[in-house]
Image 1 (cartoon, helix red, strand yellow):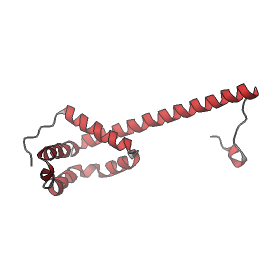
Image 2: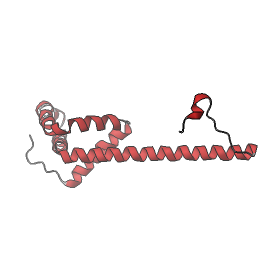
Image 3: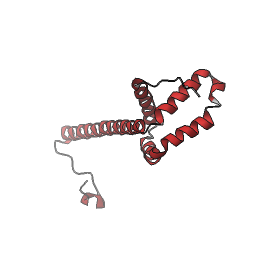
Image 4: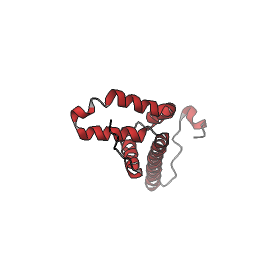
Length: 136
């Protein structure tokens, strides 16, 4: 165990951002949020179990990895850091959703303009069958 490891607020923020970006890259925000929310009361116990089972094997690879893993455990065994990670994941997910929505609206607007330019009339509602009765 590394007792002389110090965790600064900047390092906490850096680790939280790295983990959030990795989860976002894999598009696993929903699963991660579900897992983190359900296991939030047990994060300290999980950190201790991780130290017990993982820490003995990490220094075999490299001493640098041992210190890094200890910092990781120290950061993510605090509930407030788990909450910060959850908030960051939700922000990334919302940003992505807003971007998709804007692209969809732009594409729809371009299609309407193209239809007006070609046919001179407004395009008809594309809904067919029972879907034409749905309000969305």
